Image 1: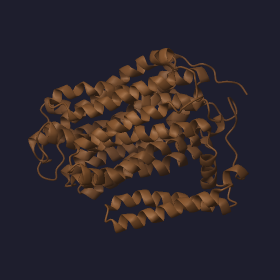
Image 2 (image 1 turned 90 degrees about the vertical axis):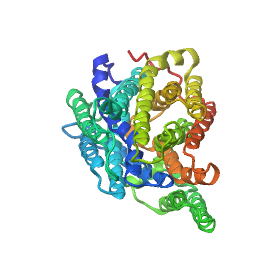
Image 3 (image 1 turned 45 degrees about the vertical axis):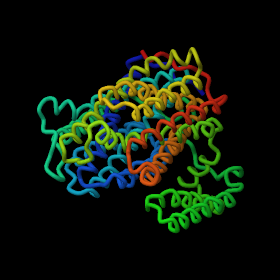
Image 4 (image 1 turned 30 degrees about the horizontal axis):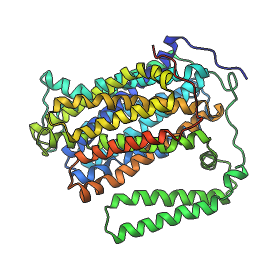
Length: 494
């Protein structure tokens, strides 16, 4: 088995360029969808439930796409058909979203948008592992982080920039401002164009040319099914008990998402213990139960990191509009000014992330992967906690430096730690399974954040950002448990 040949800087640039478009669409989603929901009449405590489409979609789509792309070979290659199909659907979703006539139509479009972005995004992670030799993979992931930052800067700031050029930033009750609509239209065009560039300018190695051929389904190994029935029964029982407690305590309905997820996983394991199937579901469950030790060590780190990010994405608009601009009315000029400023803040942290992607390789050479990731996560945690103290909205740009370093680190270092520990023939499915530890904390956030704010923080969204800051500090501590994952430092991203 031969190693992949080293690629030039511009070849790596081309293979990662599509991430600029993917992140352009994703940044519009994270910065503007809560604003659209509130404009269409969503109450603050219902927004997490409407956002649940995103994590559920990722949980379902990513391992399926990873499994299928591992076994695909067409005239376009292995991963590129998924890039292109996802980009087409995501572009259509971006065009439709700001024209949604009702709240539930907007929620359905979020579901479609997130599913489509996931179809494109997940194979991009495996694409780096497919195409690059071990020593260049950190550079590939750093390049992806760079394009993520650039795309998100422009997308997040676009409504604010359009308002500065005189585009109408308010709309009648139930209407979406022109600044938001035009930003989404531009997002659809950029996403499709950037992904199209990567599809047209790159090639893929046929199965077997470098590394093993596509994986062949096989019977579940004994170690994967041993104890599956007992473990499945425990998860199922936990889900049932949780559902009973939610009903007895009259908690919010979205908390059933957690208990339903526990029960569903338990049923899946019970099925695995009895089935003789060699199909996709059985193989994904087997791979989940036999995943590499490095992935298990990184799981808790990812869980706390992404809980914090999801708390910020859901509640930043409401928090800044209320605390720093003094409005909770989505039709008011003050609220929309605050929402635009959140776009600027999101652009700022993504811009700082693009710069951090250039600095992080040097940090890793000085301190190593674990300490570097810990430092960056704690910078992000301090940034989110500082929202409690800062009252001048312009000074909120300062904590975005820390959030940007955390974001760049989250997008690159866990993948650099993981990729060399994955079997090449299953790179796609394991990257999809690894994303379970991204979407599960999002499900947790969507399920419990509204309840926590209502019961303990008088419905004040600023405290969701504080909880996110604490979560990043815990994630940093979890980094210390990641031992022996990968010691190689990323190559410079320039």
